Image (cartoon, rainbow, N blue to C red; front, top):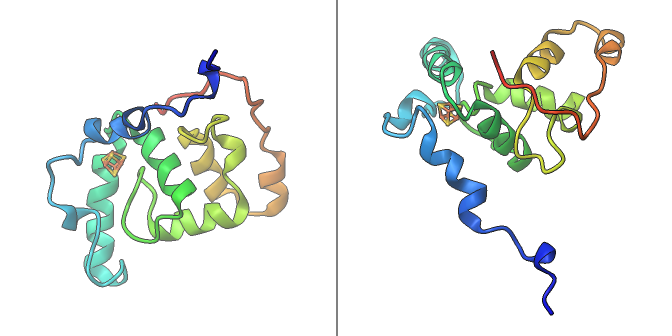
Length: 136
Ligand code: SF4
């Protein structure tokens, strides 16, 4: 008899969060800019994109995807390229659920603003089974 627990998840389960994103019908140039995000125009667009993300119901899923995939361009989950690079360098997976499908946005933001490695160390690590906190 087949072990149903070992079946791969339906692909739609992994991606259907994208159907609920606030950016779904928006111009992608708000989130991705041709100069790679540098310059004043890129900063303004990044700010506009982050404002859209802040109201998005799938912010936590989007940020987790972008971090797990190492998305090199654009704003995802309210994080810019530079912020995601920093999170990849200082660590983010302890603030994700066990499947890395959602992240704790508030604590990732706090980690980004922590000034020193010691301050980051003082942030308590969430246990894997602890319920995930949704962004405010
Ligand atoms: S968090 Fe931002 S980039 Fe991600 S789906 Fe929502 S609006 Fe789009």
